[in-house]
Image (cartoon, rainbow, N blue to C red; front, side, top):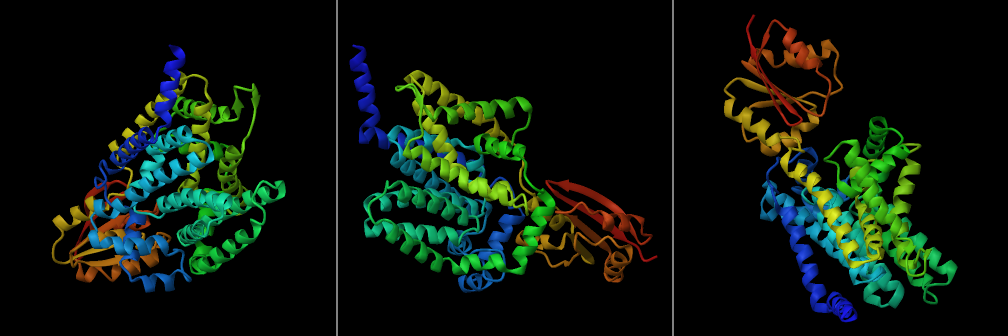
Length: 491
């Protein structure tokens, strides 16, 4: 009787119909998690910047990508998408679809590397991943790169194994779009080339595979010139310098924290949850190299591929960041999928059907708190609330001062009024300079709205409070945005 039950269970897990049903359920759960409260929060600075760039024509985007810091692929896609509207829900819906495409790519890649069971487990882990849900609800390019990473890896495997022309062409197109999405796609290319080099040196690839591989890399390089040219721009150099100043060289603790964020997101704190999460996911990852049947440790071809996919990008960024840091969670987020594959492989190797179910359930349950925090607490700058507050109370003779001046992008995304707006850099603290800027507004203003965001510099607020010509009437705080209203007197 026991043998019959095992056979039925195995047959159920491997039938195409059952596989499709489970995959559809996973995708449905992923969609529900990503659609829930999608428009609840305001667009924050980076999202508003995405919309601002996307509103320009594709030709303008291509021309600017060689001079500034934005590769054009995501913005061009969003440019077309904005035909549906520019509400928070509409703008972020594109990322939701890209997130679902990423989950589907995860299933295809993990199944190709291992089997159906690992594919479904990996897709399920990614579907409930708090970090993946968060970036699937944000109008930025990181989720696009994550999706392109999984699909390019899958198509690369197909091309290497079967060598059909359409597979090579699909791989080239996917990687070219990735390289035109974000500069960190370079690390995807590095991992892929190291993997192919390993195959060639170990003679584990089809004969002569290096020729189409080199041709494909040359084609990707030519198609990526526009997207990557901005690396050499002055703006990019300035931005890398800022990142280095803000973050500094990452430590091993930062690396461990990134693994925790990959596992359970970045919306929870506390040592118990931190170490518990690392222990749970770390155990599953470690178990991926355990071959229970043969009582030994083993790293098969699929695990080697997933390991390189994870270790090469993260390791390279970590080492380079010791010299000039660009270790930022959102930049390395696209390398989350291989971590899910390794964890899924570990779960699939745990002896006993019940033990595998309990481990999977533990991961889902552990994800509930960070997901609840993601939905329950405001994470993004509340420009919608701040601008709505000003719009409801502004009057003739008012002036608006923005500190930092760059926040005009999210401010003007929501603002529809005609009040005069002046921007002041967050770096200005000299009283003489502040007096000169404010002095231009005082003769023609009855009130001044001071909007503070992206800065710890309160010199302007302190100057206005100390001035005999201005008096603080109201101070209101929104998420990461402060709005102060000053009355202006004639004497």
